[in-house]
Structures are given as C-alpha cells and as structure tokens.
Amino acid sequence: MDRERIARTRRGVRRWPAAVALLSVGVSYIALSGYVTFGPRAWLPGFMTVLLIPLLVAHAKGHYRLARGIGFVLLVVTTASVILRVFFLVSTISARGASASSVLVDAILIWVSTVVTFAVWYWEIDGGGPAERRMDAHASEDFLFPQIDQQDGKRALGWAPGFLDYLFLAYNTSAAFSPTDTPVLSRRAKLLTNPTCPLSH
Image (tube, rainbow, N blue to C red; front, side, top):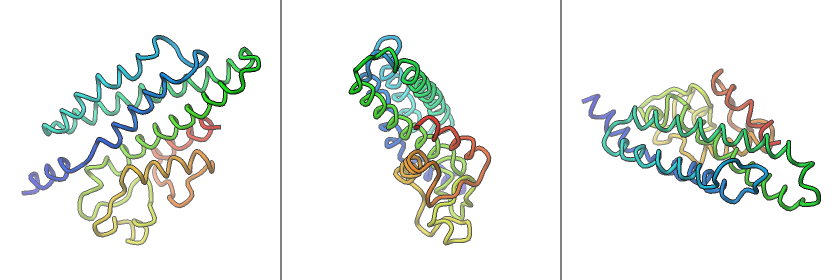
C-alpha cells in the first residue's frame, strides 16, 4: 500500500511548469545579441528539447529517478549557459560602443533567465524534490515557507509549495539580495541562493 501511495504521489507531480520554464530560458537564448552567445543560436533550445521529451516520457511511464536525473542534467547545462552569458555581458560592454539598447535587452533577458533557472533548482532540491514534499507530515529541510512555519515545521494540511512559490523565492533573492519571507535552512540551499545575487547584479 505504501508503494502504491508513493507511486500515486509521484505520478501526480506536475513537471511541466518547470519544463516550460527551462524551455523559455533556452528560447531566450535566440533573442540575445551575438555579444553574449556562442555557437549556433538554436543549440541551447534544441538541446533542451531533446532532453525534455525523454524527461516527460520517463515521468509519465513511472521512471521517476531517470526523469529527475535528466532534469538535473538540464539544470546544470542551463546554469552553465547563464553564467557564460553574464561573463560575456560584462566582458563585452566596452566593445559595444554606443549600443546601450542591446546591452539593456541582453541584461534583462539574462536576469530573467537567472531567476527562472534558480527557481527550478529550488523546486527540484527542496525537501528531496516535489514528490517528497507531497507526502503526509513531510518536514521542511531547505526552505521554510510561511505556510509551513505555521505548522511547526510540517507542511500545512493540504498545502505544499508549487513552482510559482519557488519562482517568487528566486525573484526575491535576486531583486532584494535575500529571501524576504522564506528563510533558507540547509547548507545546500544556501549554496544555491548565494550565487543568485551576484549573477543578477
């Protein structure tokens, strides 16, 4: 019975919001100027699409560990591409001359990509992943949302953080230099939130 309940819980997890978010980061790569890109413009969205399809298929067929492993590969590649974009943005400013508009567009796209990428990281690692967070009496390990805090460290009845909650957390961490209403608890979460500010500013 426990295995069946766990399987139903994992099957009920919606991975498509995080998948769409990552794909949007890949699509934004096409809109960047040549100063902050490398290789063909379509390589990143193409690579993401190639991995997203087996990820969603694996999840639908019940291969949850495989799906999560593919998700982490996607995240690592996406994070590396964001870091490179920030590096190219900073290092090529002097070469652009008077094209301030292209710098602004690139900076906005890179900032949005950073927020979205780290939102997916938070969503994926918090409490062992989205499936684990849906278990009864699951204790908070990485982030302490206000709804969880009201229940002495246990998730509120009928509530678990969704992707939008992590997107809001990533936005606050990026814009305010720190989480505003959600304390960071674990070391791995702190390691993830630390680079968000310098990459965004």
